[in-house]
Length: 514
Image (cartoon, rainbow, N blue to C red; front, side, top):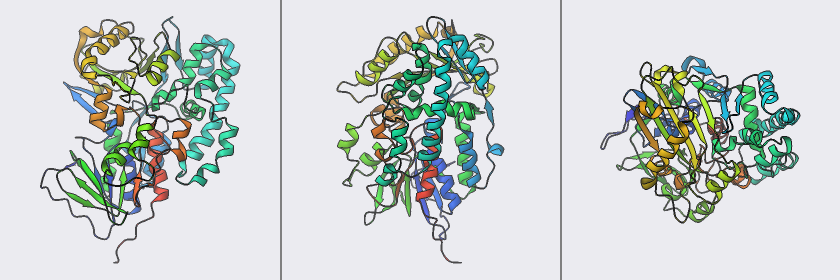
């Protein structure tokens, strides 16, 4: 990667190619850069971190690699199409490992429910654990497929920057009861409280409250069923590295350790960016993979906003925060044989905990945990015989009158998390030799995420589709947005699909003569 140091001259790109600057080397920004490069733009990607990947980047500690963000890939076809659009073969650059089971959900009463790859195995799991809800589960699967066709393949792959784009889709929203929440819809199909949790928690993976997020998001269950759940060998960091390699091979460049100070304008049109060290990058188009809140409040702070004013963004509902404890353990690869690649550990409450997180912004004593153990699939994450974990707990974001002081709370919360984990991986604390922690405050500082939110704007119905910040900016011309905070939303497939929408909005460049 090219690292931008003070006074370093920017490599001169071909004058025959119009320039594009992409702010942020997350998966949205990198996929946008790939698609712009394939169109014929001379692309420069700028990122403030020391490596590409954004929230999908990694850190290394004492021989352990901790992948900081996403742990799975659910729709490889999105990447296959991305690579194909760039004239390349995805399978030649990225190694995927299918997982089965996808994950195991555990409750405190000892119930264990595995999400499996085949429908036959899933029906067997439901019959074993929730036999009275088998019929309702079959109906639920059909519901998920209908919303996948409408919401993912249809709505999610189209621009939503014109009001007419939304109005055309209203009959579908009405037919599929988009006004109903995920949890409310699941409750119409199954009765067991544990099963309701198992079928409704998925919005938490994209920062949403299952009690309020539109039921369109039950389509995630169909994504898993239809396309499987995969682990990227080398972690999502390896996927991001492969994307950056394509950008460079197209003739683009990636500048790391480089902060964008402002987006420049000329006659209400984006004209490039100024970096924190004073370097000015001119461009015909600018694409921001930064959070829309940061883009509009900070990078366009001198520009009077028509729609996405600071006041409006502050009034918006933001996704919850995340407390993530990454740790490596010595000589434990053969321990805890019943703990797989992904395990979801439920606390004593479900809806009550959601209320504490999203409504009361209260840091509860109890918690639910998403436990990731990549070392049983990918030995490269840890020294031989050692283990690598991350434990993630949803917590309130910082958008409250009295934000949680994580400098004071971090050790206390980690100790409470330790006590919960001891029930699943007993004795793990004595084996820890490396660790790393991210709190909402770290998300705010590292990723410039407003209010330390884990996934940008919460995907409620009136913060989705046309109501979300558009892929083509409403504020100035030639500025485009990709990533979790814009249409179609958070989650790896949607983030990459945002660049697919971008490609429909950005015209092919007019290059110089021969």
